Image 1: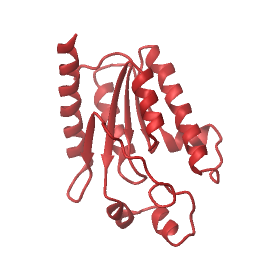
Image 2 (image 1 turned 90 degrees about the vertical axis):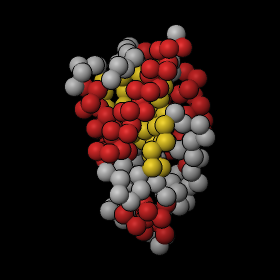
Image 3 (image 1 turned 30 degrees about the vertical axis):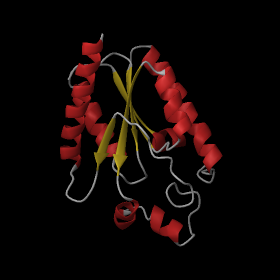
Image 4 (image 1 turned 120 degrees about the horizontal axis):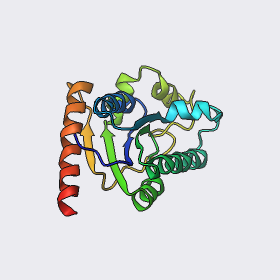
Length: 183
């Protein structure tokens, strides 16, 4: 796998879709080749930056997602690859990334909402359906599905993170080869 320096791999999808697991596998694959890469997880970063758990309404989420994009640009401008696992289901954020980050690969991990609710290991969605949780993307907050992501992966029944990762790496390689041929 040949990766341009300063590439942002923006992995987006609903909570529980497998973004973090997929991102970790991609990170390990790229790091094996000694390429400067950081892995960022939206939930972990939110905690580190001190954003309160009760501040998840749409405008707050959008503001945080824009900060994630700006942080990613800071790294990519220095030639460091970023793998970012984040819900960030906002057209404005993805548009900003496409416009402002030179090497941007948008990856949408798509899982039907009913499958996520069925899996729901943290009971986030089941509590939201019962109105015990508020501001859950996909339940209370309408998602803005990516309209033209570079890669769509479907994490349905029978999918494993290993098979999704292999599929992702093949698709990334195809994109990177095509980009090199354009130059």
